[in-house]
Length: 114
Image (cartoon, rainbow, N blue to C red; front, side):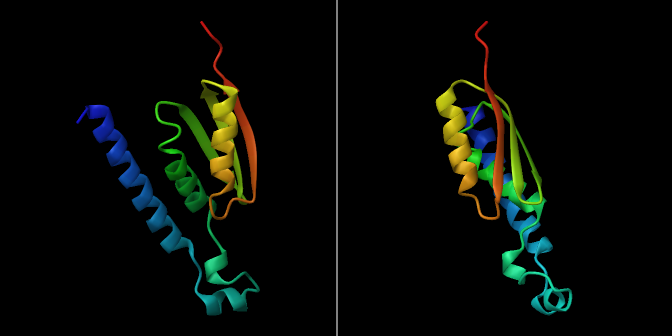
């Protein structure tokens, strides 16, 4: 197995683990949420958990690409450079299907040829 495949596998496991831990620590107790007039615990996912889940979802498609992911109030912003317009569309489609994502600001750009 190539070193890059091993590193990708390790990174995937770490991203999934971080996402699970982040989600578990950010969910609110239902009674506390009701007292504060917030959503039910299962309905709230923190921005850090969304970011982790988006990165995990992009792992296989964006292999070798430098994609930056930030999340604010459920809105995910993608920045970086990719190989083609098709990559931009595919990555956005993946992100839109991640739980908790309310909107996607796609600021990805196609790499200029040298």
